[in-house]
Image (cartoon, rainbow, N blue to C red):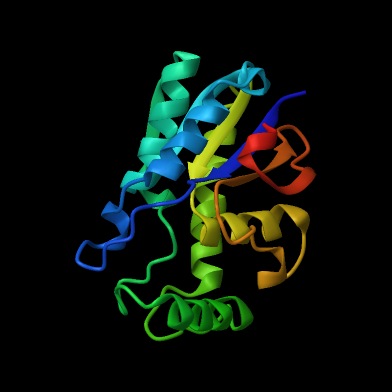
Length: 191
């Protein structure tokens, strides 16, 4: 039975002068990604699929180098579109993110609606899984759309209570064949 893992990028270098999709991993984020790349738990991974955002690609590249695997970049796996507000200070960002999850059918401050972001990420994941290639699949992406994906496969309404822990660099897994969630968010160090 194949396993699908959705991994969120770990910590990033925050720079308000740079658009969020172009942020890179921080030293801590890079160290954490290098640690997961050394695990034998990923040895059955035959596909690594990454969002097109820099921080996700950097995470995927670190893991792919250790597994001697290629990366497929899928631009539509990006984080929920928050370009309408640009960078927000952490407390303001958290308040808007709370609204994003609480009101999934509404565009909060011009952000992409949660229901639209969920449809997009599910479509991308299902497109890849429809190929029915052997082995495990690792998707590398982001916390917001990752939570929306988790809610979808868990069969629950969109709600922030299903969000990953705040520090990021977490993953959940589901069975490739039956799409059943195997476990909730775990820090990447348990891989």
